[in-house]
Image (cartoon, helix red, strand yellow):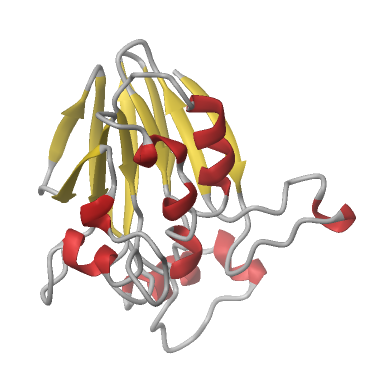
Length: 197
């Protein structure tokens, strides 16, 4: 399993000398195995990942943690989406109001973006996340709801003895009556506060 980080920031891309160490792009992590090529989130870092994958005919799976703009703003600039016949699968948390395609179409359509989903030349499939564990190539994937406004999930991916967890924007004390201080995180008090969320 090879992991490459293309974006780590939240909220807004901020390239510049002060963000050189960790980069200025928003959330995007690539996980590669012999039979799977996955992007965890589609922040502005997805553009750079897509540039590296241009012309590569492998299927690409994009696992979205949630649909806040900093986690999807790279979708419209992802080269594989504009390659005729390229297979791209986009997975995201279930909503009670609309399916994933419908929710993403609000962003990937005028007036916010000039190219609507229906005009993309790639073969795009949208998947509301299934409950439990599912497979993508040789990777097993498990999603779990985590604390963050809107439906948000964290992921655990594993292959043989290797595993990787991705929990972007996780706020375990969200909604707690008492927000734990840094010293309390190591005590039982922090666990009790987190349990009341």
